[in-house]
Image (cartoon, rainbow, N blue to C red; front, side):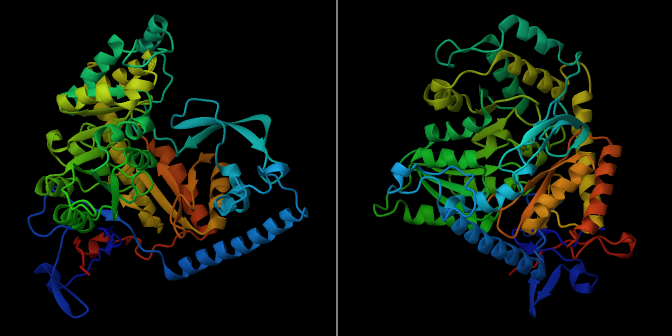
Length: 551
């Protein structure tokens, strides 16, 4: 049965059995309107159902969440007052006595939650592991004697913790000696470092081989690789746009995109997440009014989006965005950090997922830090674009080149995906990831949890809401030998604290069932099953119909 809690762009999907549905007409507030499937009217650009879930926070949960933050804030001010008068030990960094008349460097409100909330649950982050971050890992046990201000290692190792937090989508983070033979060979041949930039003495034959392989994998003319994924965005966007240009950025874009946009000096305008009406409105205004004051036409208009949004688990509405960028003669920059390798029939990302032509995207960006079990990133597209970046990219001019063993690891993984190693192992990994993702998401829905994102996204956010449950959830899961990532305000909206699971092809069904059993028990214990639209145990009783009601 289809999940009635699915939402596209903030509109809630419902399921009903009546004649209006069958005729394609719906009623809301007494007004009859045509149904929009998948958020697109008749003539949809989608070739298959595009279903995302963003169930709204129950009112009582939102009230209790704000109340929890309110109580925490009151006690935070009280403790700050006690620290100021010397009644409580001040553990955080503080200004020297000689600087008491300076503008505060540390003790300002920006660090309020760090001092008074984050420090209380800091033990749930930065946990040191001592093995490969595969489907399971070993964790170094640590304890605190001063409420998380400092930690000490006990010398004990927690073995075989199920890893539900790493971006090891295809399971290439591995230590199998046979799989890493070529990487070992390149390490012995080239060593570990380049000690130079790409424009000086840092371009090796392995880099050229990798760039040709990336271009072939993506189906584009050329590609360029970089040693750091974050810098691929932050150091290349300023080379593509500048003063007099307009950047239209999704409100949930990654920090690397945000930083690159700010460093460029271009004008930045934000559109609502995955909302085509908001994006088109900005495009219209940009074309009609041009630049502020002068009213001159913008030199360039570029749209920045991600393939899979790492905190929401949603997939970009690429067909609609491509249609808009063609209509308004804008450029499109697509960050496939989380989607390359993770979606698409052969792991070629959201372009393949939607059955689109890579030439429809002006700048294809991705990273090797997730699906390929390595490091670095790439930008691909037309040869003119890549040749321009070879000369003007800050990363190519100033940053150290990708080290050869890492380049070989990417080549090994990509050849496996393309079948160039003579096996079908790469395809099997892609298909297994899809099966694991759909199974894990379906079971969470059935249990009654509120989860966000697309049905095909291996990033699965599970909503915790209340600040007190963030630490309790992560600690309890670790007691059950399960490692998870938890996230709260200000990294998320104040009422949307969450646990973020990353599904991997390397996870076995037994591992996933172990995690699901623990979640089922913990969901009851912490009362986390907030969904009002959990699936029926008898789906055959209901009609498989999905639609959106317009505002």
